[in-house]
Length: 124
Image (cartoon, rainbow, N blue to C red; front, side, top):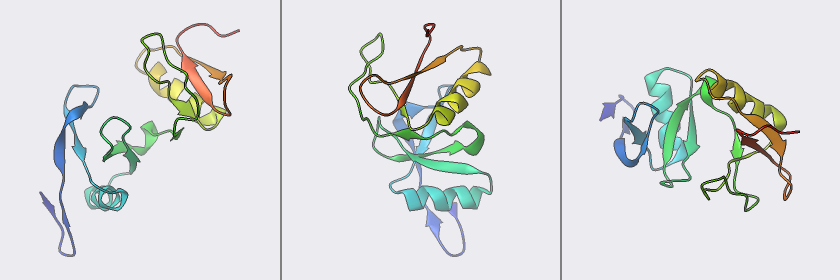
């Protein structure tokens, strides 16, 4: 538990959501709670609503890019819902983030809605 003179921040570790190193993410019940915790930590974190657990997590600002709620029913090769990016710039930010990990992705416009998706396949 993190404590501040004006407020107490409660967080617990997720049983379903892990970071890239396999460590459980901290979970917050509201955007405001996550934002207050980010301020308390003193680093540039962005609260985001997790589509997996329905709770809020924090992500370092440099690794955050805005996804939109599902606006299409596109799925990846495993049948999982594809992430939708609001703008080409948001999708490009994720491409650059993943490239730092050695993952090459390409951007394409969704054929069913007004968003952008990423793929590991070459896009013509």
